[in-house]
Length: 524
Image (tube, rainbow, N blue to C red; front, side, top):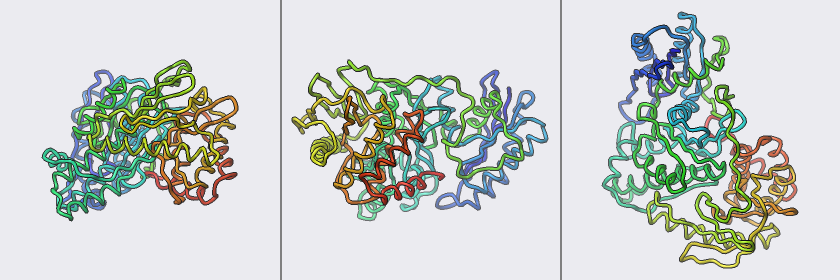
C-alpha cells in the first residue's frame, strides 16, 4: 500500500509517500520562516498556499507505483493553513479516485513513535510548539492524562526568545545558549499531571531584565521546564502501571529533554523511545504512516464530511486501527516495595516507610528543594486532613535528612484497583471536606486513595498545599477526573457520582470553576 500524506497545521508545508510493503517514507517539507517574531497566521497561510502544490508534486514524482489513499492533517492547527491542506488533499483524492483519510495531527505524533518503537501500549508525551500532552490508550481512545493549562511548551520558549530578540524558532537557540549556563532559581509548576508554563516564562523574561546572564536563564529554564515534563510523564507511567514511554513533537529534538526522559525511564526500569528527528518536527511522514493504518482498518472519510477542525483534540479520535488493549497492570497485594512516581514505599504489616529518592534527571539544587518541600508538606497536610475528618494514615515519624516519612499502613488496595461508585463518592466527599478546611490535595489520582473494607483513605499529599482559592480546589477535581479517564472503563458514570458526592461537602462554585478549567485545555 502506498499512501500520500499531506501536512500543514502551522509552519510546515509537507508531503510524504509511505510504502507499507517496504516501510519506506519519503518526506518533502518547505517550512515557513517568519522574518521576525513568531508565526503570523496570514503569512503562514500564504506560504502554505504556495508551497503545498510544490511538495505534493515532488512527493508524487518520487512514488514508485500507484497511490492507494490520501491522508491529510485534519487538525488541530491554524484554520487557514488547515483549509488549504484539506482542499489540496480532496482534489488529489478525487483526481486519483482513491480514499481520503482525515488524520489527527497530535495522534500522528504519538502513533509514529508507537509504531516505530514496537511498543505495545505506551504512555505518550507530546511536546510541541502549541501543545504539551501526556496521553494513555484506554477503551479505544487516547485519554488525556495531563496537559498544559496555558500555553504550549514550544510557544512558551518562543515567547522568551522574542523577548531577547531572537528569531523563530527559539528552541534550538535556547538549547545552544544553555550549554554555557549555570542554574538559577525559577518557578516549577506541576499540578497532579498538568503543568503551566506562563509563570516560568514571565520569570525568565524578568530575570534577563534584572541583569542575569542569558545563558544562565536559558539553562535554568530548560532544566525546570523539561523536569516538569519528565515528572508528569513518570506520574503517568505510575498511574497507568505501564513501562513504556514514547516522545513526540518538535520540542523532542532537544537533546536535554530526551536525556531526562531516558534517564527517568532507566531509573524506574521502563523503556523509552524517541523517533528520528524527521518524525519529531511537524512532517507529512507521520500523517502518511498513520493514514496507511487507517485505510487498512477501513477508517476513511467521504469528501463531503472531511471539513477540517482547528480544535481537534486527540481524545476525540475513535482509534480504529489498534488491536486488543493491553491488560491493566495491578499491584500484587503481597508486594513489599512499591515504586511510585517520586518515592519508594517499603510496606510492613502495620507501618510503611516512604522515601523520596533522588531524581538524577533533575538539577541537584532543584531536586533537593522539591524533595524537602514535598516531604515536609506531606507530613503536615496528612495530619491536618485527618484532624479535619478525612481518613488518612497516622504519621509516626519524619526524617528530613533522609526525605522519609513513616506512616500507618492503611487499606488493602489502591482505588485504581477497586473503582466503584461508592468509592468515588467517598473521594468526592473527602475532597469537599479538605477544601472546606483550606487544604488542596494536589495529586488526587486513583493511585492516591487506599481502600479497606469500610473506608477510603486519602494518601500522598506531596503536591498539596494550603489555599483559599476556588481555582486550586477545582484543579483537584480536574486531576481526579483525568485519572478516572485513564484508569476506569466507565469514567463518565463515575465522574457524575464523584461530582454529586462533592456537592454534599464542597462548594458549588468549585464545580463551576471545574467547568471553566475543562474549557481551558488545549483545543477545547
